[in-house]
Length: 447
Image (cartoon, rainbow, N blue to C red; front, side):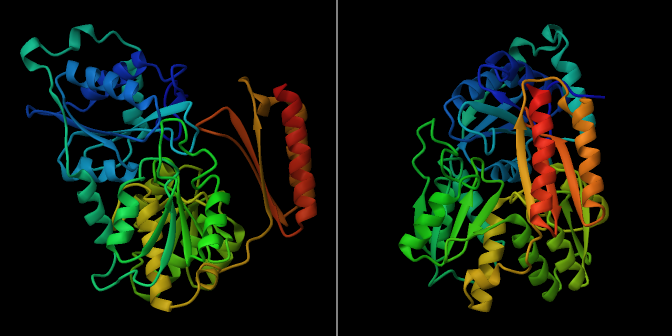
C-alpha cells in the first residue's frame, strides 16, 4: 500500500506547501491519539533544527498534541539523535524532530520516534495516516484534560554527557585540532562544546544559523568549505554534520573527503579487533561501494545489504543481531549507544581510532580503494518516468553492457521528487556512459 504522507524518513516537503500549519496540527493530533496507551499523563518531546519554518510547525504541533490531552516538552534546536535519546530517557510516549535533514531551508519535515527512541514502523505510520484523513473532532480531549506545554532546560548537557560516555573513560582528544562544520543546523551549540570538553582544539564553522542558511554551502552535503578550512588551519581532521546531525562526513588533514563507507570500514575493523562486534558483519544499503564489501570479506566479516534508508538498516540490525550499520551518505548507526543515526557519536568512534593508532587521518580512514561509482539525479515534476518504455529499454541495455562487471541501481527518492541513477564497476568510462544514457532517457521522459 503506497503512503500519502510518509516517505523514507518521516513527512517532508516544502514549508507552507506540503508542510502547512494545518498538517502539523493534524499530525500532532493523529500521532497523539495513536500513542495514548494507558491512563497515565502522556507526554511528547519536540525538538527542531534551525530553519525559519520550525517556529510555525512547532507551535502548530503543540496545539495538536495538547488538544488530544498530551503534555509537550519543548527542547528547541537539538540533533535528531538527541531527541530520540531524550524521548527514551525522559519516559516520553513519543518524540518529534522538526527537520528536513540535509535539505535547504525552504523544506521542512516531521520525524516521529516511539517511546523507546526508534523511528516508527510502517504499520504505525499507516495508522497515523489513516487518522490524518479522518475527522478527529469527537476524539479531542475534554476541557479539563487538555495538555500543557513547557520549554525545558539542561537537555544540551544531557546529550553532551551521553556522547562523551560513548568513549573510553581515559580517552582524550588532547593534541587534535578539529574543524567542526555544524551546517548552521541543530548541532551548532552542543557539538563544538562537547569536542572542547573532550580536550580538542576546536575550530567551529557553520555555527551561525539565521533561519535561512541551514545546509547552504556547508555541512555534510557541501563539504568544500570544511576541506578549505582544514587546510587553512592545518587541522588534523574535519567533521561535517548535516542540518539535524544524524549523518556525518569526515575530511582528512589533506582536505580529502572520507565518506560513510570508509567510516564503516574503520569502525568495523576496530570493533572486530576489540571484540565489540555482536556478529561478524555489518549492515549497509544497496548504495554502499563494492570495495567496502570486498574489504570486509577480507576481514572475515559479511556485509548485509538493505534498501536505501537508515530505518531499513536499523530494522535489519535489530532482526539480525548486528550492532553496526549505516549508509554511504554518513548515516552511521551504533546500536550499543543510539536508536538512530548519530553523526557526532560516529565521528567520536573514528577519533578514538585516530588517537589509539597515532597516525594521520588520511591513513586511518583509507581502508579500501572504492570501485568507480557514478551517481546522478534526475528531478521531475511528478508522474512515473521509470515506467516510460524508452527508460526501461535504456536500463535493460545498461545492465547487458555491464554484464556482471558492475551493477546498476535506479530508484525514486523517498524525500524529494528525484530519481537517483547509480552505476558501479571496474571500468569508469563504461559506467559513466551507461549512467548518462539512462539519465538522458529519464530527462526526456520527465520533460
